Length: 402
Image 1 (cartoon, helix red, strand yellow):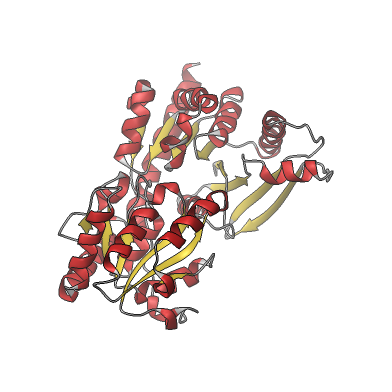
Image 2 (spheres, rainbow, N blue to C red):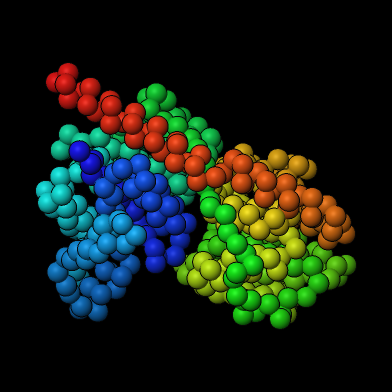
């Protein structure tokens, strides 16, 4: 009998974001392992709903279902019924839609990506229907949201009532075990994976003609955790002594735009700062071969896909020893690691690589070997297979015992 699972997530391609990319990759692994995979996609931050309500635009709840790469994808939207609607109105609506999906498809296991509202709704549904549930922590859900008094109790309850919890770094798992010690016997940490990429087949990116000198690049959705201000500080320190361009592939998040506009202006980099804005993943990848140095100066960052992509492109990487970045990379072997929140340390590492093309090449080739060996899809698939077998076996034993 084919077991039917439902993954809940805040994004799924074509949505742009690391969580969506990971869920797509993992869903394909689970299909190869013989599961029927459903993905329920919904947002638990209701900016659009609140804006519509204030504008007097009301709508019923909706669920759009389609098949994407063998996955049955359900995109859920909460109803907009009142200008005075609160978070719990929307969350209750989404929970009812999840329950309706289970009533229709009779899932054998639920799996939530992101521990906050996503994990809470999924785990509540699992508990009420006696289903096994896995929660996967990706980063910001435990690095930032636990500092919200409103969310901490939900996070703790969800961790406590999970059948298994996975993490993308040992640091994240340690924090969760401090919060809820009982998950020590039902949790594991393993990294994301990435398939090889043929960079030579990618088209030349649009802004490549603006790149001059040694190109220091970074990519992603730039926000508080990324440490971008320290990279700006480092490049500001170096611009008078080195011929450099700072290339940012992506854009800053909208809610922090005023802050980043201020920081970018204060950097004084002028035309030596190139920002692509939001681009497709293919275009983002096409910029990597044009970077001499890839900088990822995160304050905290889970297991960022952009790091793995830069490793595949054999870029010389400067990172910080936080979360999976510090677990994957080895200082002086396949990267240079510097303390977080230090523009001075970043500047020193960048200056060293600017003056040492042979070192850049050695570190880049070593990084590529590391990612091909330790972060291959087969490795991650074996980890998921172990987790699913363990959770399903425990569930079956519990059912027999009861």
